[in-house]
Length: 615
Image (cartoon, rainbow, N blue to C red):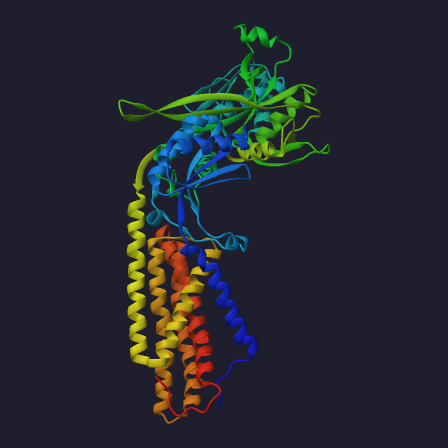
């Protein structure tokens, strides 16, 4: 009997190993502490700004590895984190708020690997260092904001339906509608049943009054939406920090966990996460003189704003819709080839927009961005945070036709501005304020210490296993060691291709995988020994050893795989990291132990007469 694989199977195994080796390589190169300078929505990074960044850093004498300027971004690599932090502070002072200066860890992967799409695994907070925030969503504020919206919506609906009312007011969670005459009540009830079915209705003793209140189901939806919207908003804001693979997940009913691996500037992270922003659509006041408003003569029904170029613009005091009524936004080109943003509103917002635009065709409408920035000042050596309200008009477009649920915003300067505006409309507004209730910082040195200890533990375990296998199973043990190295390479390659986040529990999963892989080889080799003791020939023993041990290996690995899947489904955070590496490791170990090692054994023993096996 000869033990051989067909040529195609040998080539397939070798190709898998070579591909795995290529995609595992980026993890050997590491990262450079870097500072990234990118544009805000209103400005772009040009060559002049890139030259300014380079000259400022060179003048300060920081240890710089390289300057890179491409795709409208400047990336400066440094020799150490101290120079990185000092340079970031210097550039923020030099460039001001027109540009985003973010700390980053830039990979040192060679270009030929990058061209193949090969990237290193992301490192989690415990390995890379960074900051951990626990944010609490102000649910009461979310409900109050909803009550304010419904209060305005009811008032507008009454006017549109020509139902005469004395007052619409909020009182202790109720929206109280007082009519001018009890005769108007049937019309009011009909309107409420049609447009405000989510509100609970109460009829007090007074015949000319109706009280409305948010239903329990509506309150639950509002709170659920507030958390979901805030998570989306925070995820997009984190992009400003240049963070790779942040962790943003819900904890409980009203809390959000935010982990930012690699972030060393905690103050900057707080400024980004703590900012509260919203959007408003308002009609432009074309009847009054904006210059008089600038001089202080602002009409009662209007408000004075400024656009992104600093020019004054007079807007209607009445708000049409706000950002939290936008359910979707996407950028593109209109029929004339001009950049535009396509917007979708929810039901209430669509109704309001339809009625307003129907009555104001030909009139310009503006988008107002309102932001509460958290700025940092150093007072008596201490960092102090204070909120600053910023309001500006980011877009003005003429209403060409009546529209409601879906419409387009035009008048934008570039496709890039359209993309940024769409992003802002989709997730630029926090649905409710958030408070940072817990903050933890993992320093880069501690993260590096975790990496060193994790690598040391994996290396020591790996070497001990290699030594045991080589001594106890001789040549077959050496083959098992080669298959084991093959297994680790493929495992790391798959994790890198999936861009998984490696954590300390993930390293534990890799170490356990090493043991699982060797366990499979031990089962095979002991079975081969047993067949030899039963009097079978060496070639038959090899064949029977691999064939008969497979069922046991498959059974034991399947049960472990099912356990790992359950850990991933029901676990969270670090448990998921352990489950991911263990699950992938089980599959790769089965492949390398039953196929990879057998290919090598076939090369050694398969095509010759064998009297004795080195096992």
